[in-house]
Amino acid sequence: MNELPVRPCVQWSPDGVAVDLLDQTLLPERETWLRLETWEAVAEAIRSLRVRGAPAIGIAGAFGLALGAEEAFRAGAEGIEERFAVCRTALLATRPTGRNLGWALERLGRAFDEALPDGPAAAVAAVRREADGVAADETDMCQRIGEAGVPLLPDGGATVLTHCNAGALATAGLGTALAPIYLARDRGIPVRVAACETRPVLQGARLTAWELTRAGIDTTVITDSTAAALLAAGRVNLVITGADRIAANGDVANKIGTYGLAVLARHHGIPFYVAAPRSTFDPSLATGQAIEIESRDDMEVRSGLGRTTTPPEAGVWNPAFDVTPAHLVTALVTDGGVLRPPYEPAIRRLLTEAPRLREHP
Image (cartoon, rainbow, N blue to C red; front, side):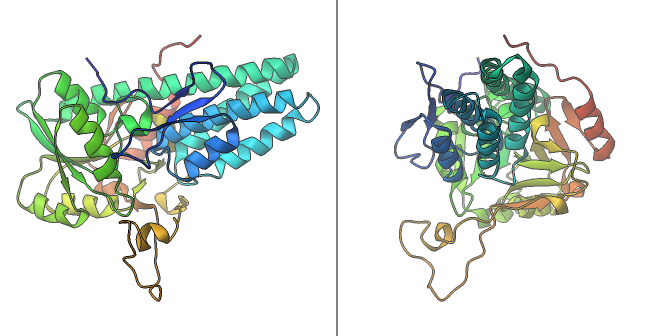
């Protein structure tokens, strides 16, 4: 039950002094685990997409900040607050679009400040405990997303179209968009997945297909430009994606190409669902227009297939994300249940109610 194709992609090393992280840039060719002993190494892993997916980035950032707090403590009590703040600011800057990273670092910052009156050692210990809490909470929320999303799949089976990777590799749990698929498999509901390859870094082809096929789930990779033909042929029951940040009105920032899928789904009368934990919601932003969209290196496009594919005279625009307007989203699948329009009051209720998460030591 709930068997995943890979152990959590971000976790503490067995000796507890480093972060063990699956290098996702090497998949599907090699499964290589990295041992990261400094917060700077964790920051580099986030920037370079060795770890990706909003919840997993949040967990990695939390573990990195815990390492930073311990390093700051070893440097001496004097100046520990300044060193901790430098580390937190640097980690926050690694990937600006996703909300989960800021959510996690804010939690650790509060834990540090609340425990500091008891001394630097107590503050550092509190940060480590809170980092573990972030990981456990994200995992729990994925399970609840899966429970909420399974009823959206027809009992007789379904073909689901997804984009990018929002599974075990993106969360260190069941995933967000893929959580209902894993639970459907466990409950004997036939489910097939069409995975957009997700240019230019191919997270769908490299990662989603890798973890789903390892889990024994029928998976077909399609080029991004094939999605319209697949939907027009009536071969998809629903579209479900993850999210990196969701504004107060329900606008969704997710991997570039998501907006186009939402438009296609609406045109063809197919439900378009977005799955995300409450850690992805940002009530401080009224609409998606205020979401900062990360721009990636031109080389991801110019040589993304292992050879030069673009003449040097041509420019490149390489945004990592786009924003899907709330009116194109059929429902938001969250750890607090399925939210339907109007989204603003539904999101407000979700974020003000106490999350039903397990207690952590």
